[in-house]
Length: 190
Image (cartoon, rainbow, N blue to C red; front, side, top):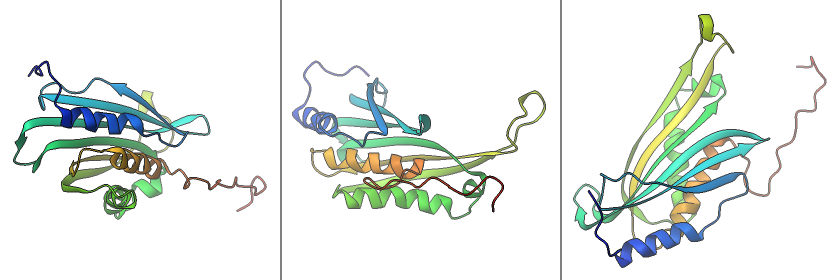
């Protein structure tokens, strides 16, 4: 559905809040095209999370706005996210991982004072083993977090900061200001 020509104030303020916040340096944000058929207005950001020069997680945050409101959203604005990260196999196989992944989101929203309602989502953990021509590492794991929630209020800065915290948690980054120590054991030491 094509958006009308005039952008509603509610949507403009919400986009401004998303554009005004900055994440930690390991997280690179970029504006990307938003899905066109989910709501009359949309805005989207993509993120790449880097650790030691490797991209270890990616994500997308989409802001949807329907001035008429949406019953399932319980409001006129909706934030939708998709985050994925590679994990060590033992962590990816942990049966508690989905609950922990959901807590990463809800704790981040709470820690940043992001008020919301109608949150829902899925956490998927995957283990993959390659064979034949695709043979490689013995196994690989990943996590996917798909979630959405309705922000309360139009300033979405706290929601973006919470999303950046979710990305950092999913990627296994240490908290801001904390430096992970390198493993200094000699080769072959247990």
